[in-house]
Picture 1 (spheres, rainbow, N blue to C red):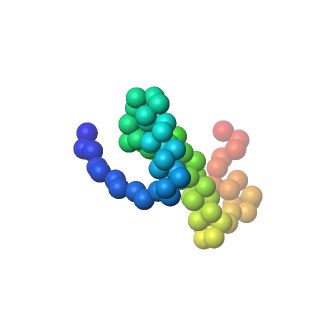
Picture 2 (picture 1 turned 90 degrees about the vertical axis):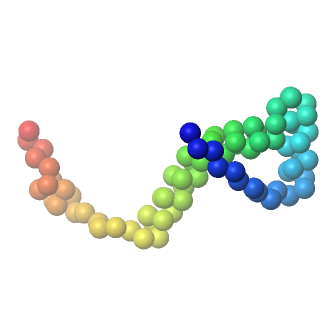
Picture 3 (picture 1 turned 120 degrees about the horizontal axis):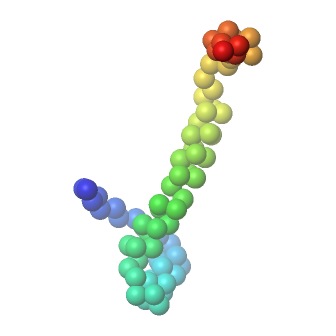
Amino acid sequence: MVKIMLAIRLPEAIEKRLALLAQKTGRTKTFYAREAILEHLGEMEDAYLALNRLQNPGKLWAQEELEAEIDLES
């Protein structure tokens, strides 16, 4: 597994909260940043993909077109 470094800028208040959490729990700030990203990445992907789809709709299918493509009798 290749690990990539990521540097992010956070508002000072958020960084302080993160540092305090890390200090109180004995974990690293990196641990909590990674956990937050992994927890919410799927939701963010879904939201942005849905927004993109609304802004750039693809082909619209009529029900008759869909039924013609799929043999519903089988």
